[in-house]
Length: 256
Ligand SMILES: NC(=O)NCCC[C@H](N)C(=O)O
Image 1 (tube, rainbow, N blue to C red):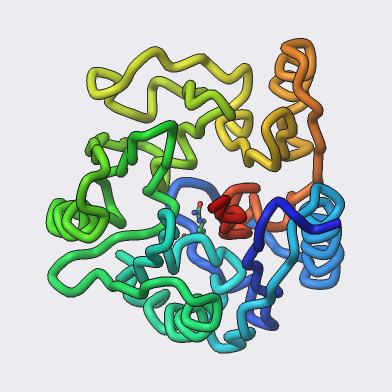
Image 2: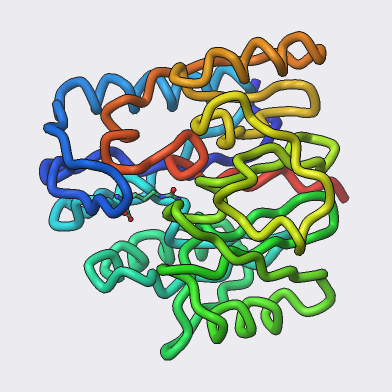
């Protein structure tokens, strides 16, 4: 059964260990283990009802596995990004082919705008966009125009790579994360995640969440709230500042 929608993923390439690190110390990455972790992550999406669609691999792009950063899907519109890190811009072409195949309306961020998908958090009817090292004001303005009609709220991010490194949303649109990493004055209440990696929650279904194994206290907290919580070990991606959110783009089934 795969009725939740389509999940875009991209397998880790041979140069994964060369991926960018900004806020953490570089440590070695075990490519074979990363590939196994990615398969388990993909299996968790499938088990939750998502039809997994592979974006063509991009072997020369070490960070290509973090496919979320290449596109923002909002309703029927797919906005191809212009990643803030020049090293990552070649990743977008492969994603474009797939979103065109899905029949989405394709738009794109253009220079001098920059925008990473990891900075875009859709929560309820609001689109929060992180303003920081990877996403600039011009990128946010372009996104707001392309998503015309949606409420777009810029949020300053400090000390974290992306907005979704710092906070994500639960199925009811409420926020969970690390208050020190975002300008909370732009936000409604932000529930404090007991550990930093608990800031990253993927909504697999109305009562089903995906979390990293490195966030056991957050997993317990959300399970106590009544959520079904699936946990995956993504340690080799966390070594490159990745999280559960950035390894996929979920395109929910549109009900008509
Ligand atoms: N959305 C995300 O959180 N993406 C993680 C990207 C990690 C990658 N090493 C980078 O620095 O771009």
